[in-house]
Image (cartoon, rainbow over all chains, first blue to last red; front, side, top):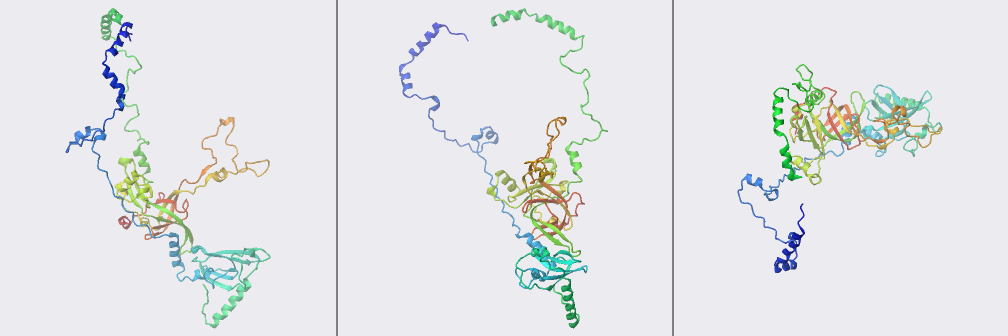
Length: 228
Length: 297
């Protein structure tokens, strides 16, 4: 930019001298920048009624009439499924089919039924295919539909164990051959697997039991005394 | 400089150039600078023709490929309630089974070919407090007149005939005893697991000079001959489990409409209470749909 001549710069000072005194003083008294001058917030003017749509569209967003708030009703939930214990429901339905009288459950529910099978009893199980198995009961596992018991015997001097599911349809009957003489103080008699405590074969006891049973049955003219 | 410009401009020989260019144009073909073909191709740069095979990378082709493996109807969102056993009364065989429960399953919305590129039914299950939901989701539910759902999942179907009306309930009798399903759920999370647990690595010796690295992996790759780097996909320790797993071809042993139960054969991935999505098995013939299950709502 072309620099103004020094003469003109000096002449510029005269402009302030020519300025009227009253104006300069008043500005010093109320010194405020333009930006901070207070002005009341303008009252929002209501929009004319029945303004056509094309005019409303031209207004800035903040001046447009606010749309009605959409309030949708939240629908209530449908009723929750009543069944709180589905596993129990499935098991009960199974038990009602497999054990309608509750006989088998009572026979092995040693926690509630005092006359049930106890560990240490000698049991004889007959299966649907006809093979009986007998042995001493080492443990009873109460698990609803999966309730089972463990039998131990010796066949040809070899220790044999068999876990039998109580509610299996393949189990025809369970008989108590001999109850334990003294209440066992353990829930699971796994110590009986050791040679020191092993009972050995129970075949003799079972054979005796069957002989007695047959003789009673003969007297009663063929009444089967199966304890299930 | 500027005051002298008019003088220089005046000196430029403008008119003779114009005259000479006009003379040249009439005789010589147009010369344009930049590389251009003298014979521009008339056809598209792609190999197009009526005898060419249809492209396989289009959405249409993708849908056609999936047509045979997409179920005809939607599945259901269930919760895994646990496992038990069922005896077959005839054979006396015991089968382990998983109990799944349907909890207020309803159709929330659809995905359509026109709008989203595929057909799917969006189902919701359970219930969630409206104040515990984002506004966008709340609007999504209430717009279709459905109470807010805890779980929302999509089930792909083959075409629009599989889209159930919005708001219809899917009950346990949607499935039939004896049919086969695929169960999809997240497996149990095992956290950060080592390579022996995660990938079945053998680990290292207990002794013979091995110290502090009995369960770690051996070498992570070859040396200089192999590029002196670890190849992508190298099996290493990391987060195990809690990833989606699908168990296919599970037979439905039992259906209980009143309690909303579906009992399936065998096991399903995930802990008790996890969400299991079941749908008709894609590797078995589609089940014949009973009209009663369609009508239930």
